[in-house]
Image (cartoon, rainbow over all chains, first blue to last red; front, top):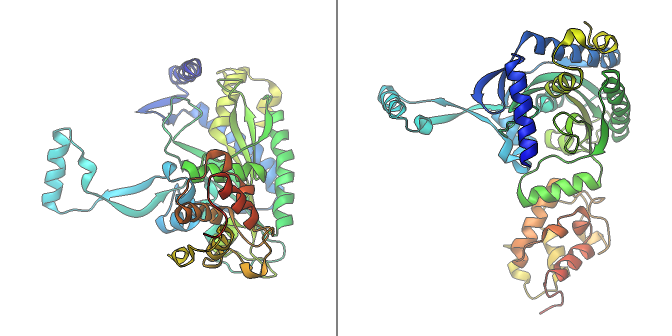
Length: 306
Length: 93
């Protein structure tokens, strides 16, 4: 385990020294350089090249979702340990003075903070389900949405590939069971083709989300037994513990029921999504092809639109 | 609690009573056989979690990790089998 921690630290320090990531003094929270962002943009270009012909509805949400959306999503039941909620000062002049005094003494100045109506998005697609539900029953063709945003998961780590704030580029399919499963199968092929074109080694395996506690163990084994989640794994700092860079998820009717999304025939919608972890793919590219993008293989640079 | 009225029933009856008092199934439990697939009857993953916690509370037991699997809760029979495995007396008392 400590060898793995060393490998994480070494790669993180290498990225910080090269100026590709910028330290913010918190594990898992980084600034990105222009070079890093250009690679991220390239991954989005590669994703769009494959996905745009499907003519998805493009929706861009901020990294915050409504607290009510978090509550209705079911995420608090399965993964409370990852949730981030936004708090803010909500006192009077006296409270303000007291807060500053506490701050000066090095105490916990956050004690008087109140929850706002905003939570942080745990995944890019969380804004999509309520938006599609609000439209009413879907047409027979269902819906296909392209989304992209910063996400937050509270899991501080020195592994540069386990950031607390990171971006997911997703396509979300909503429709019948068959439409959702066909979409996932198609993207499992496309996802592998994109990563292969970037010259990265990978494997695809059945996976589970990091659900919380004993009840989470039941959810995780169920998810695996039903093969609801597949991950495309790329070795970044370790070949034994490769990193999930793309995930292919079938939610059955979990979100359809939770949000009251219905098909043209009035049935509860099934949903599926594909998510590209753009920072993780960037980190994999930098690891495998080196920190100097100008020396990367021409074919890889072409795919990224350089 | 609904199960307090049925403590003298067999474990199977108590499991059925528990399933009847909730909205977890889309089909009335009375129309389902003991070996009927509860997932096919509408039991979702999240409802399975609530069912598991309710069973633990009703029978004062804790399912070990090895039983935290989908098939443990797949039918009334499967649930009773799991309860027996962890020491619940399954006959009427």
